Length: 82
Image 1 (tube, rainbow, N blue to C red):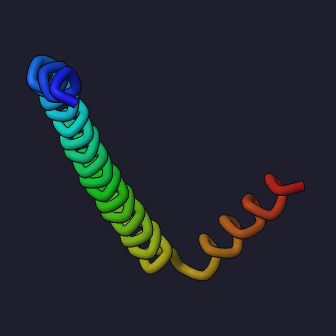
Image 2: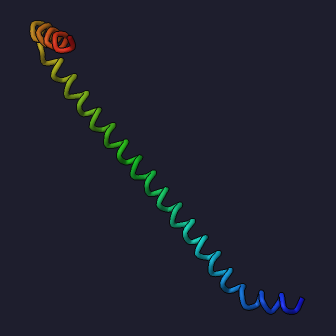
Image 3: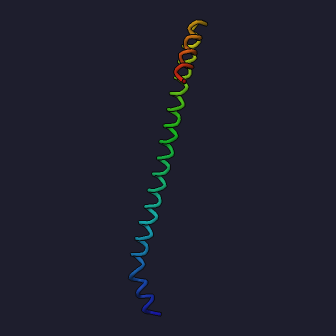
């Protein structure tokens, strides 16, 4: 039993160091995942803002059209779909 205590006395710093490395890698991984989620959230917000600007611009364009322009635009879109 004494030889086991002597062996453990020599090995435990290496075990503790390896455990510290594993814990450090885990925290680096978690912080990377959090940063990735934040970046994805920002990209999604930017895409939403762009879509809203485009929708507002299109709505303004349609409001500015008179009836004949609207009919021509709808006919053009319908013909393009075919």
